[in-house]
Image (cartoon, rainbow, N blue to C red; front, side, top):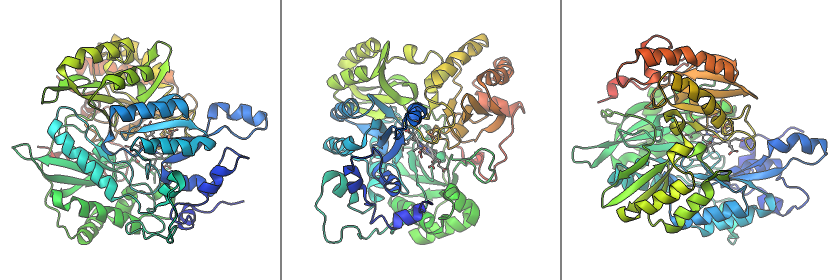
Amino acid sequence: MSHPSVEKIKRESRRLRGTISEGLLDASTGSLGFQDQRTIKFHGSYQQDDRDLRDERRRQKLEPAHQFMIRIRAPGGVFTPRQWLALDRIATTWGNHSLRVTTRQTFQFHGVIKRELKATMQAINAAALDTVSACGDVNRNVLGASNPLQSDLHAQVHEWAQQLSLRFRPATRAYYEIWLDEEKVAESGVEHEPLYGETYLPRKFKIAVAVPPHNDVDVFANDLGLVAIVDGAGNLSGFNVAIGGGMGASHGIAAHYPRVGNVIGFVTPEQVFAIAEAAISVQRDLGDREERKHARFKYTIDDHGTDAIVALMQERAGVVLQPARPFRFEHNGDRFGWVEGGNGLWHLTLSLPSGRIADTPGRPLLTGMREIARVHQGEFRLTANQNVIIAGVPAAQRALIDALVAQHALDLENNAPTATARTAVACVALPTCALAMAEAERYLPGFLAALEPLLARHGLREAPILLRVSGCPNGCSRPYLAEIALVGRAPGRYNLFLGGDHRGQRLNTLYRDNVTEAQILQALEPLLARYAGDREAGERFGDFLHRSGLIELPPYPTHRQIAVELHA
Ligand code: SRM
Ligand code: SF4
């Protein structure tokens, strides 16, 4: 039986209700119906199954071990200690005893079973959080720079992320009716969706706000990137706008490619909502609704031409973009350790292994973070590099936090003995991700262990080489912006990409196709040796590969790097 298209499912979902409520009550299966599996994404949840158990369950003629991933909507990624404790309780009561920090600054739970889904959603809501449009063809979690060195601006950027997220939430009450038992009103299921209409967007839409010189949100990987421009007195003058970033690709299909957003101009703070809404509405109307793999804003822009899209955005927003203002990013990573944030408060950034906060032998990270949440009075900020900042710690409390960090192996030495390990990012992949072709999160520690002797041999243990691993070409770890990236092809086999920069401004290039770990290390060895011997002072690995002519820009049709003349 052929399944209806996602466009049809959206249209017939009665504003994202479908038959989810009924499906939750069906005790004969751990699964939802096909259409509801699509609709529930808009409520921040994915139906998955444990792929480690697939074969065995098939052999036993059992249905797959169905379970649900739940993603929180957390614009800017800020949580209170109370919320942390509530999320910890949810993970240990209904989830798989782990909290997973994502590359979009929020938490995911894995392993929630259908009959406990509603209770979990209600517990999330009781913690003053929700999961509305954390997934689905709508505006997704809005990223906001988390860099603790810019305390005043952080508050402003966080507010922008919040406001953009609220502004572009769907209008339907479906979430509240299904999960929170809100009473159905007469127009239930036919509400007016002023921005999205009845078929929502052709695809997901992503917004990020960055504050130079730190590009910790990888602003150019977003459909709409806002680069804060600050005047000499440190006040926000407005934003440079970048459009058309995206990482998704397919192996061997040239028409599916990653792209860095192109900077199209500058807007004042008063113009931000209008220009953002115009971008979303242009994508809503012109985006491809036939082929989902070709439906992101980046393809709409490339198909229609940047000039035409920008003209339409300006017309719809009633805004004339000013010329882009100069800016300069220094890096797209996090700054680890303690920094003073002003007002006598300190911030501690911890490097977490792929953002997975769980208790494993010798590394009780979930327990450690819980103990910290019990005494911490500031806030927790998640970073888009899957790390956590314990923010707003009074000087007098630093020793207590340090002791808890050391006691629970949350420190850098235990977690990440090389600079590359500290900054590495890996997507979830197996066993929960349905699309994974190879391991990522579970493979990263092993790969780092294999890479470490090579780095040590060339005196590069402290060289901050940016490594990212994805289990398939969809690019959830933003691998195409890394200096070294592994992108899964098949179990134990990866495509090796090299030559991204450390600012998130240049895409990397395929260097070896479908290779094993031994072949990857073999390919890297001579390059690292040359880098160790021939690099200029402060020169990063990706830049060195380009300067030495060892790598060229990738052959994608458009926007492979941000124009250098924009950099102050
Ligand atoms: Fe992603 C699909 C996990 C950030 C591009 N992503 C998925 C799914 C839901 C698999 C699926 O569709 O069945 C993965 C769930 C795995 C699991 O078991 O949890 C998944 N994506 C993730 C996370 C958890 C990766 C991580 O390890 O942190 C990130 C959650 C972000 C969040 O909190 O909202 C995550 N995904 C990203 C990013 C990075 C970003 O946004 O900065 C990208 C690249 C940027 C972009 O969107 O272009 C990304 N995910 C994708 C794609 C490719 C989309 C495309 O344009 O083709 C897919 C596949 C799809 O949508 O069909 C995908
Ligand atoms: Fe899954 Fe692929 Fe995303 Fe990794 S990159 S989480 S394997 S969809």
